Length: 309
Image 1 (tube, one colour):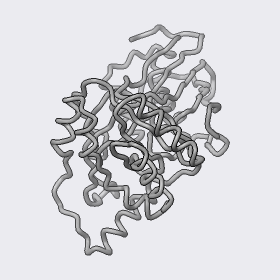
Image 2 (tube, one colour):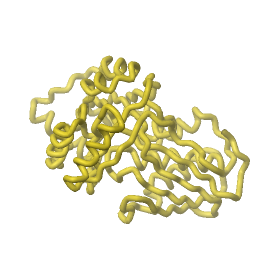
Image 3 (cartoon, one colour):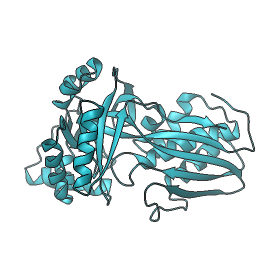
Image 4 (cartoon, one colour):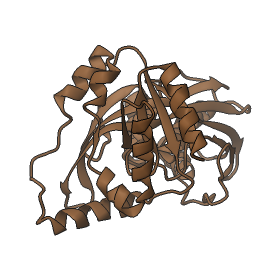
């Protein structure tokens, strides 16, 4: 969708994600890990509004505490806008207002969703009309999860997670998220994984990790019960080591009807798969009674899209 350059705000919405399967290979020469993951975009969104401006700036609001977020050039949305401007030869800047609902440092790709939404918003605002492939190439330079936030749906990610291939998923999957009041640093979780593996005499093969075929079959069948048996995250043990309280949350979900639960990505958000709306409500009540912040979402949903502008 292309819009001529405009003086009005462009509003773009992008989803958070769950990693419903994640295998982590060894550390590569660039310091990153080879991964194989199954992403699903879920109905918890970031809203980005972009206005024409001379400089680059960002402000935050939303249902979560955004007071600790950087608003300088280290912010991923600012980086996205500047990279697009540089790539497309745009002389001006942009003012971004981001309404956040995806947990910060929660393993759900909220910052990546902001960056993806910013790319789509600025492309429309500036009338740069970049091809989808060009936007994805820019997204991949910003971070491993940004290309998926652009495309949404359900996909397999390999390499650093940014090499995407769509995965067929039928029907709708229901999830209840237990959202922590703290964040976990993704690099710290990977470092803990490496430490754990080193202490077990480095049990990592040189083979590239792959997503189990059972995951793809369950998604294709739209069968939550089959998918429950296939959920897996290599980072979970590391996240549990850094935040032991997550273990009790996983147990609580299992005791109140979740088909399965896992730490999403590097955590600390815990995602519980349930078999429908009624089960989701029951689990939400149980988690809330334990003073946890619980959110019912469904997937798959589309990636970054223009809402108005």
